[in-house]
Amino acid sequence: MNSTNRPGLSRTIMASAARTTSSNSGNLKDTTISVPVASHNLAIHFNWTAFTVAASAPGSALNRFYVESSPDGGTTWLPAWRSTDFTTSTGDRVAYFKNGYALMEYGDELMLGQTQVGTTSARIATQYPLTRDVRVRWDIGIVGAAAVSAGVTVTFAVYASYPAEG
Image: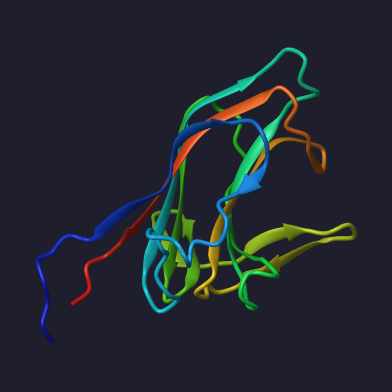
């Protein structure tokens, strides 16, 4: 087996910008910064540098990031990974994928895990593998079960890192 000393590749998926509403990146498959197919290993890094809540914002606002994958070319989006909620002014969340499946941090180890998805009747565990159709999504200003966004601003960037192949 041949190995390489080449470093991995890192790409900016979304440049740093202030965002005030919940949204998504759109399908990354058809862009010049495409996310690799599911057979690759991948880390998606969310880095926020500012989080402000106006005095007029309702309640205490939470924020979270997602990586989603589509089984049908971008019509239906299913969760491959979901961050923990954050309320701090700066921070990072990293989604690690191996062979298309999200790895979760358990102590000092990365292990195959499951993402918790809330439903109206119960919380269920689910994890959908990455396909060619991948997007990142964010919810800003979550109060209760709704992303209200009013008066909330988060400045963040999203990067993807791929290990060297070989």
